Image (cartoon, rainbow, N blue to C red; front, side, top):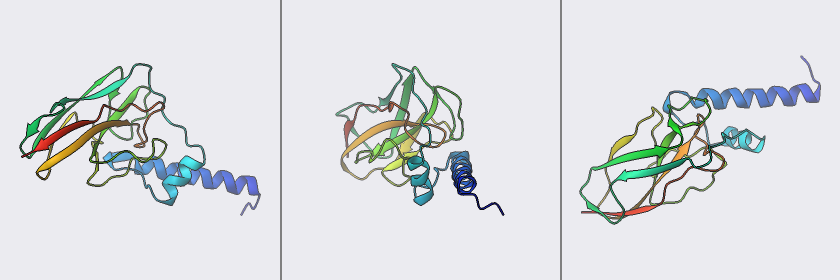
Length: 162
């Protein structure tokens, strides 16, 4: 076994990268645990967004009162929608942020009730929300569910669910 420190460091980085690539396939986010955080800390490159690329919520519109389940349609301009695990330039997939803000634009987007992933390249969704006021925002993620550089995010809209 090679015990050269440079070899061991390179092997560890390669293993972390392979873990991230495998975890990003099939619409599931890569681990945001220690391995995911180490990838970003190790300088994992982020996808560069094309100048002028935008993402937006087509429906519902800001200030709308709706019934649950809510039909949400996503739009993009200047960038293409592609499934998670796609690493082509100028591509990404949608993440819907509900009632929160994205904690970091340099880490993989978490997957939970407030961070919905659409890793199959979906451009619309039906979402169940409790009655009350809610905020919605779209964030485009790259093949590894990491926001582009600079991030491609929609305006935050507020809706009321009856």
